[in-house]
Image 1 (cartoon, one colour):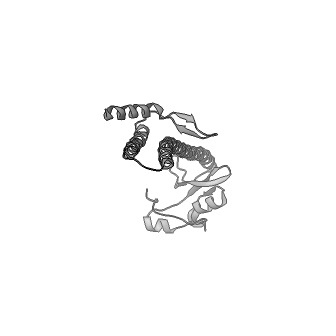
Image 2: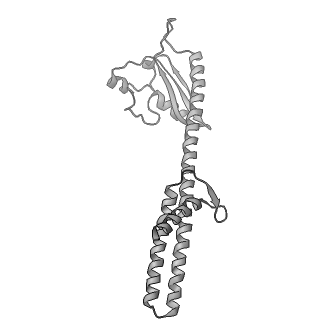
Image 3: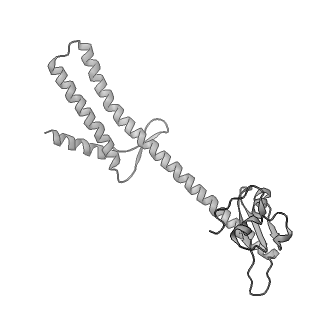
Length: 210
């Protein structure tokens, strides 16, 4: 948390160099290494003496670095060793796998969400278009008759009101689904199956009309 506000440019500091070159660094004395970026220590008051830094790689691409600063040892050794480097390199490989898995899981969830959204839109479009098409056919029939009688106007108004109620039922049916199941639509496309809750909503509408 102490270093979280700091951002280094590519190649800047030990960590930046490792990220840029993709190679590990073992620095026993940072004061003797020109790649060390001392400004962070100056701002925080922390004193870096030795640094061990290894790249995090995923498919040969550097996705970050893992850095250890100032070794603590009860045995008296205060400098990082080759054994420490090998240990941190192993740890870095595990971390890289975990990061990649997290990315894959996120991508999978995003793809699943996008697919579910597309299926929901397809279901809405299918059912709403069917009802609008039926209403459009009624209008075509009335247009062909020429004269719009009061009885025909009354029937058209009732039909339009019924279509609006059914379209509202489509939206409510999708909103009240407890589990998502899909059915084939056109080609490889699928849509969410809302037939059962939709029929329940339509029966409710019929009950309210009586």
